[in-house]
Length: 126
Image 1 (cartoon, rainbow, N blue to C red):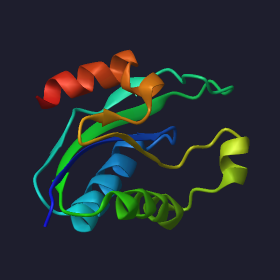
Image 2 (cartoon, rainbow, N blue to C red):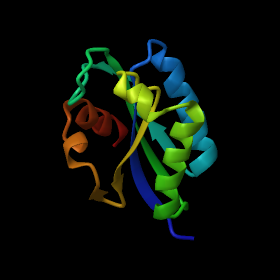
Image 3 (cartoon, rainbow, N blue to C red):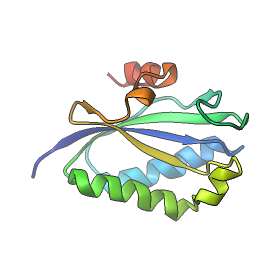
Image 4 (tube, rainbow, N blue to C red):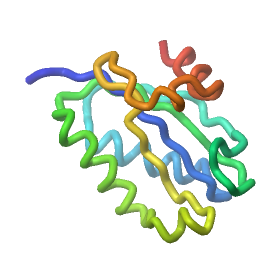
């Protein structure tokens, strides 16, 4: 089985952000297996988001044998499982956001990859 190295950005703007991130971590462990490391959660201002509610963010570094196509699908499934809807986001509520930032060295979300909190989180994981 081919191994893939992925970075996932995890975020929420719910008040109990640390609990949401703990839920996400359990789900990612169950879904992807393999070696996993997680950065320290950080409180951040919203970026490119019209609402002012603070976010709690974290980055996961995961080594997995899950295929790239399935990785994306699993992340969307986990967001839906937690109850994320487009209607909530339109109202300013991001229950959970799971973004595939990098896959096998290929940066997929350049803007997010370069954000100060993500750069700091990545440095913590190396």
